[in-house]
Image (spheres, rainbow, N blue to C red):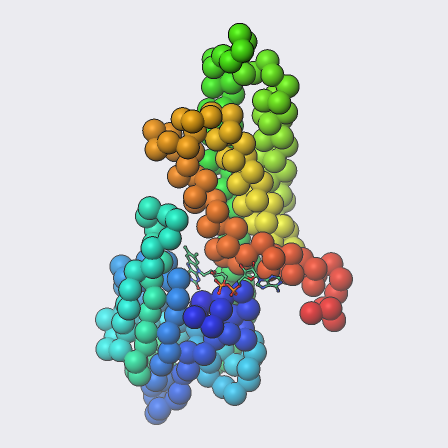
Amino acid sequence: LTEPSGGSDPARAIQTRGIKDGSEWILSGSKLYISGADKADYALIFARTSDDPGRNGVTAFIVDTDTPGFHVRRVVHTLRATHYATELQFDEMRVPEENILGEVNGGFAIANDRLSRQRIPYAAGCIGPAIRAQEMSIDWAKSRETFGSPLAEKQAIQWMVVDNEIDIRHARYCVLEAAQKADSREPFRTEAAMAKLVATEASSRVIDRCIQIHGGVGVTKDLPLERWYRELRIRRVGEGPSEVQRLIMARDILGGSFK
Ligand SMILES: Cc1cc2nc3c(=O)[nH]c(=O)nc-3n(C[C@H](O)[C@H](O)[C@H](O)COP(=O)(O)OP(=O)(O)OC[C@H]3O[C@@H](n4cnc5c(N)ncnc54)[C@H](O)[C@@H]3O)c2cc1C
């Protein structure tokens, strides 16, 4: 989905072009930050197939990555040690008409549906490290002593542990509410955006406090805290930045006319 022209507003940003040629479509353009594309057998590529500059001009194509013209330009390294992203280029790739997913110019609805659904497990995946980091911090605070008493007896540390618990439970309730609505086929776009926003930001705060409670060892690679800190920083951008989640919720809360 994402291109060098931007990922927050893909409906307007997509410049990869699809032109019909007999029973085939010719795709040309580029994509950026596409996770694991160098190992994928197939790609789902969203391309502009009409002059409509927005969501009504985008089509989803299922593309075999062996197709001539499909190039992985480079691996894009990030804060993460693994799960890297890639930059892709498409040079006049010929894709059969039957590889269109859904309708011609109806691809953006597919992207939107997938993005909304994906936000729920993406949010849930942030809570696990936060829970584990909190457990580690409680154990550490009870056993580590400074100024003649355990850290757990100091109010500054107690409040960090409590704030962690509030953040973890808040994130968990938001994720469960979104998942429950999605499971029961109720509208869940606002809840999924809220879960993504709350879980990524709350879990980031938790890991940050846990590093503080651990002191020096918290920033070393002897513990997983620094890795979780880096991973969660990415998650406030990936799958739609926090600002875009707020924008989605604002549209739903204020009504469609406030775009
Ligand atoms: C590790 C990683 C893996 C990724 N994997 C994939 C993938 O597999 N497939 C894929 O399609 N994409 C993927 N992405 C792309 C990701 O979804 C985009 O980075 C994200 O949507 C933001 O797009 P952008 O980077 O172009 O930022 P831009 O759209 O340029 O936005 C920049 C910043 O502007 C702010 N902003 C944007 N809009 C608004 C607004 N309306 N109001 C206020 N502030 C705003 C936000 O803070 C945002 O971070 C991945 C990204 C990363 C980092």
